[in-house]
Length: 121
Image (cartoon, rainbow, N blue to C red; front, side, top):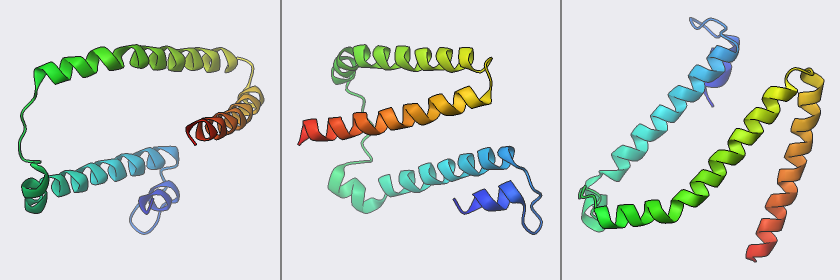
C-alpha cells in the first residue's frame, strides 16, 4: 500500500505509471509478504515448536485432500468462468452497464456474507 501512490501518481525519481504502477505495486507487495511469511515459517523457534523444517509430503493424505476438495474447486472454477463470460458479454454494452452490474453484485455479495455469517452463528 505504501508503493501504490508512489508508483501510480509518481514521486521523486519514480515516474507516474497509472494502472501499470498499481499492478507493479501490488505485485511487489505480494512478493514481499510471501518472503516475510516464508522467513517466519522457517524461523528456528517455529522449526522447533511446529516442525516447519520437515518438508515431507504424505501422498495418501495429499490424494485424500484432492478427492475431497475437487468438487468444490470445480464448482468455484465454473462459477468464475460464468462470471467472466457474463462480464465479457456485458462489456459490449458499455461501461455504465458494467458499473451498474458491479454495484448490484457487490450488494448481493454483502447479503450473501451476512446470511452465511448468521448461518454459522
